[in-house]
Image 1 (cartoon, one colour):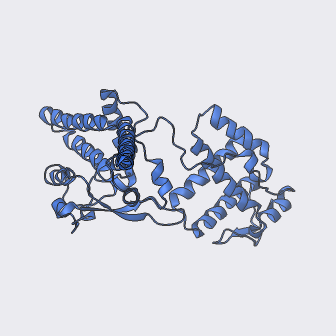
Image 2 (cartoon, rainbow, N blue to C red; image 1 turned 45 degrees about the vertical axis):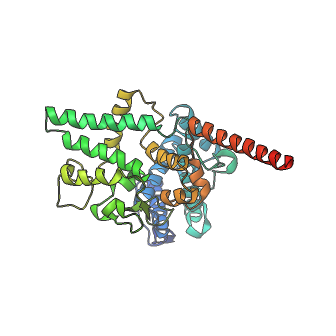
Image 3 (cartoon, rainbow, N blue to C red; image 1 turned 30 degrees about the horizontal axis):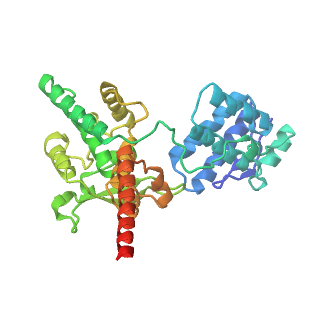
Length: 371
């Protein structure tokens, strides 16, 4: 059998001289994926995102044991049911799979790309969109986080940071091996909270990302943290922002790490692994989980909880919500509101203040009427 076609840079299929192949189904699937890759590259999506989406398509093909031109809505429902009931994936993960597959089927079923003619010619059928609103998960609320995900309490943070420092001292007195990694991870945890950073933002910090804040000279040369690898919008590069230092204990932590902990002065990276590259998220997560287990802190409090805690504690301390929104790098105030967890103590004190103010106003009004 012959497959007379080629793929252009925009992902369109074109007829060319006959190309004999032994397995036309496999060949056309691969050409579909190559074409879809080109289409996504033209949208400026990240390479990792494209590879993840293509992997998802291959997974669906393996599960259904059918090529894209034979897919049906029933296969969609069976695949989704397997992910939920057998693999127990999170809601956001399921929706991510479905969105990737919907994008692929939109591509191969669009007549502008020519796959309908190719499949009609060789297989007597054509690809169709099988992912609809009625058989896929919808994104109907801003926050998909699990209920157990929460910020650290101040007591938990104090205990965690003290435990991390104790481990650095313990390892340092028993053996040199592992001391620097423990010190590095302890510093990373503290800075994740000090600036409300995501892990990717934290791991890419460099020594040149700190600057003076002329309005807060007491912080010295660490008054501003320039985040260069903020969360990117789809099809856009990482979004940068500047985070102002707000706590006096932050600069001494950075200064001490640069003076006594950071091993390789030949690199600009603030934190490096034992092999010289950037620290992997799994590395920091393993240590955090071990410390959390030692202290009896619940599993729902994770690495991202440092960021949740940062927003929560600033808002509880009376910082302006717009300031917190800018510090977090959120475009919309509603996104910052997702992180606005308030402690029971703060709620009680706020309620008491309002009630006392109401009583005072009532007494003052009564006194005026009597006079």
